Length: 305
Figure 1 (spheres, helix red, strand yellow):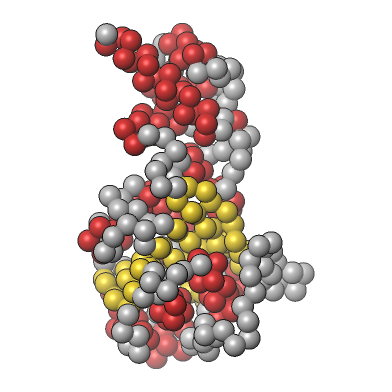
Figure 2 (cartoon, rainbow, N blue to C red):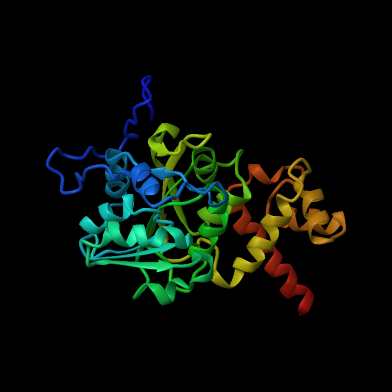
């Protein structure tokens, strides 16, 4: 929550840090560091550096990292969040795309022997080659324009994190946490893997330079297994993509159009799943999509037999 003065307030259930917290670090002079090296934030890379130490501390606390945690950080920038993570995690792997920031980042995190800085695109890295095992944590302030791609890359990796905590555009964070009636392709793509919730809302003024929109921290606690059987995930994504391909259409029409089916086939499948063909995709809960996937699999098996 944000107060009338614009201060960041904790959401219900978010703990307040104590005054003697080991995470109390002085703010990193991001603007001065960039100027001293003749650099400026790159709009093309969505660079908005979070500088408020209290907010950085609260992000890390909301991740609830155990002492032996391995953390993957995407887009560390100059290391404002990285050095806070280094205080509580056993190992931090920070992947930065912008090569011009690497020397500065190395300088900032040099006091921390448990931080590894890698240059490259996280979408080109296999987490299995970065982290020692499944059950690691992802904590990051990522560029807004790659939110969907990063989320899917991490959640579909061969070894998956235990928890993902991302600072992203507030509107997107709220969309990820949507309930039936307001569901989206992004919400389903995340919720099939775990339970998301917004833990913190952050005003634009907490960043340098300030973005045009407010931000939020979304925490996703991953389930041991996806809520759709792994062997049916491809079908699940095929169906939801078709369902949301034309949001203003009924599911009967959206599925028939998106899958190249006749309307009767789409209607029959929906009725087998106990779903009114005249409903729209955003109204369905994940459990209903699971019923639709099951109906699809049974229909295919019947046809093959």
